[in-house]
View 1 (tube, rainbow, N blue to C red):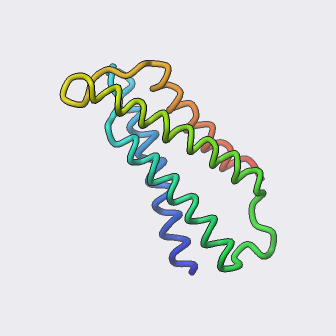
View 2: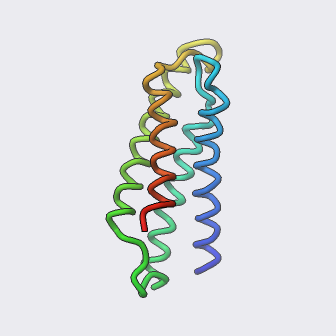
View 3: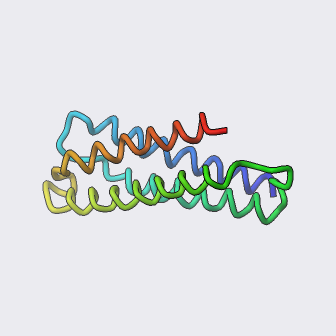
Length: 124
């Protein structure tokens, strides 16, 4: 089960890297990189899978992470995924799928992603 957990952790990290990288790459353009939505979904699925595998296999019998932290991260991940979906829909209306996205939506994705990473690293 540890291999499955590590595989899901890898998926989770790559998903967040795609979201943050896609946001940073698109800062100078009015659109948003289309892979941000898929990265958010990968991170969300990877994170939920990690918690499920760890709980089911007893990896966290010694205490594990605080479930409040997991709930906060899940909430941020859901909001980011919804915002990324909204941005994807807005961008699809424009120039071959890369049309303009509302700046508030775009920057909320970047800011919430950074906050989610800060929560993951600094909340013990």
